[in-house]
Length: 179
Image 1 (cartoon, rainbow, N blue to C red):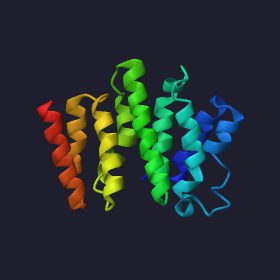
Image 2 (cartoon, helix red, strand yellow; image 1 turned 45 degrees about the vertical axis):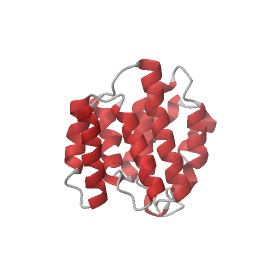
Image 3 (cartoon, rainbow, N blue to C red; image 1 turned 135 degrees about the horizontal axis):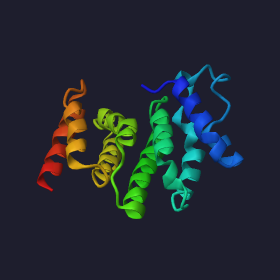
């Protein structure tokens, strides 16, 4: 699980490269005032997600895809809200699609490790609507991650305590093998 220290490190790395308005949205100074990350909700970051989505076409955005995916991982680990989770998963899918369209390349191992295990672990969500969006994000990831690497992570997902996540992993492995 991504903690506050990771968020602070990410902020110190990424904030100097951002406009002040975007930095304020991505890194609001609420960690201390809200009692830390454990009490914060994904809803707090919906406006930041919306702004990041508008930045996807920027030529410099994909140079920061690793930082963006690490930020998304942190937000994914916050207290869940339906709106926030759906918006976050759409952002992750959009980032994956932008990488595919603009670079036609695969993600680096560090980028994959920063987000994919978390998506796989949660892909058996209790809500069918959320589960479908998790699966869409994983499907988008299969377009930019080498099949052997995606299967490695999916196989690790087979040991999840969530039965629905294990089923989703089996189905995704089948898709990857068949393509």
